[in-house]
Length: 346
Image (cartoon, rainbow, N blue to C red; front, side, top):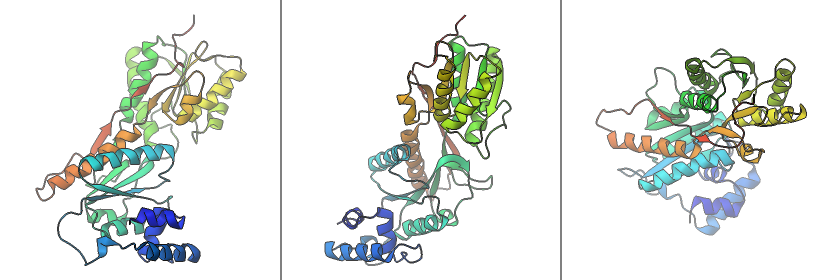
């Protein structure tokens, strides 16, 4: 009988069931009804927290904790967790995942619970690439940051997408299609720090794009920084752009921006890619529903999960030998070809 069985029979998440059975329900304001339901179900099913029976045991537990700041059942986060689970299984580890929803108290409790249960190491993942203040509990054992970076003084390794390489790939798609003029940016730019607040990805994508465009002699006519990367922002920025320019190509820093750009171009009587080529980033599910399908530079969600576990397993193998892994492992961002980029019309 597993914790997942108790959670399913109680109608709550695995995280909630775990917190109830470790005595943290009141601390984290879990309802009394849910608490009683979980405890009653655990008794009926004969569930026992085996990791604590008999007290601490020596040696590795062959388990990995995975803490994520969003809901693991969402499509993109689910791919990250799936990759991590598959990698853990290949190395003979079990992986236990919990989501925090951005709640610092729950985050702290999850990390402590995983340490209490003798997890050999923890992968701490964020939804959006950003620099973080590492939660205190993560310093007490092997840890890998996924999609996040720590301060300069931290020795905790990170696994992130290679956003600079992704920016180069985006620029090459347009250059190889013959675009040299009339290129506009939607979402960030033109300078490397003209980006939404705390957006590491935007800075690095700009660096990669500017490098390739400069070498190829490509003119970036304008850039429209958007505070958030939503379809509404993409629509508004593209409408504003069309008041002053007739673009040949748009580079949108997020597929949702590209979705809004499609709507604005269509309203203006312009076709994709006949009149305007459009390129996106992330390979968000919306990209496959756009017509024509959007050409996009994909975030490698599944591979990020795989590589985070690979780095952690490598750390566990090096433990005691004084050898540390590289601080940052960058995972390539592949190009997902669609039909939204074509040679410019004369």
